[in-house]
Image 1 (cartoon, rainbow, N blue to C red):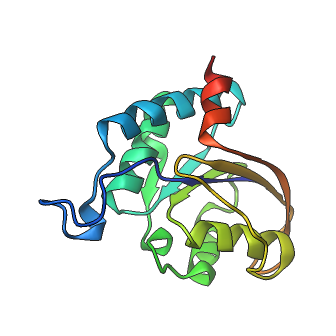
Image 2: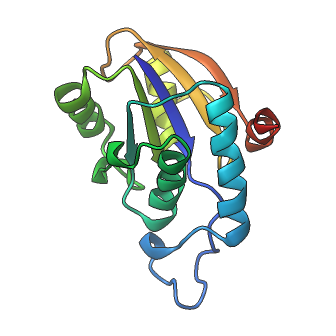
Length: 168
């Protein structure tokens, strides 16, 4: 299985009037534009997801929707509370294995530090790897048998700038 871990794009700042709830903060217009370029870079890399799982927080959902639109797969976008900040990695992996275990390429869209800690756990079996996922950053893991613990190999980790360059 190819597991792609994507951090949401640039969102309005915490405490912005009208968006006091963290879960309601949307992408900025610049963040939306950059994410469209990032998604084109993903397409250039032949990511071609079978499924996109996203945090229901507005900024993550909007990021996932841009990816789904770019790949023309809006019906393959599923929201899960397990990708919210402070989500439960055990529950997330259980959901993937039990409901989506037959999928070959899954994109997970969420938040830091949850995503880098998840990647670290899947690569090294602990959360100690100093992985940095910038907003709009993406990493690719190859997974043989998805479980909580070391089960994946890091194929690559790209910054948003690299992904935009891939878009051409």
